[in-house]
Image 1: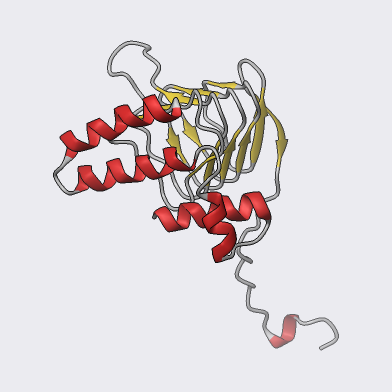
Image 2: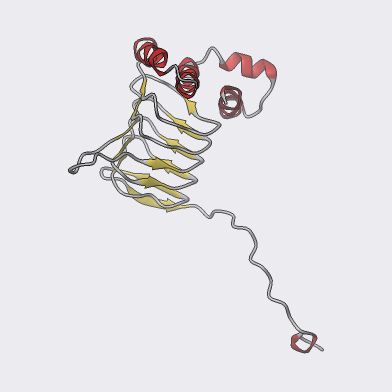
Length: 190
């Protein structure tokens, strides 16, 4: 998964992926935070969660980034700038999620149990965005800088503001609907 994350970040930065550019991306801000997060997940899955806790703390000290040990993201998880990023350990996310600096994806307590967001795929979180509570963020979503999201966000939406509201809906390509069969008698000009 680390390689997929690096390739996705390389494509975002440079518009193309090559070995040279992927090696170059290793020196950019946020990359070490991404790699430490993946290392923590590997250790947790292999029964070494206590050791993973050390790397969670190291991520906080070295990168100013706190991602809970049990958080999961699919391939293409990118942290552009790690400072101030806080992600609750209960968060589940899909593929190609991009996080800018100061983003908080976490719990909101409206009584018990405390709930955390569920994230789709192909999401961009702008700097300072806050995503709070047991909400669902759809696929192909853009969350604007400093937005505070406390309600579900549908697929293809761009949300901004406090509280966040939908300001734009993208057309998401859908597979073509099955064409109804037409008998020879129904055809025009039979």
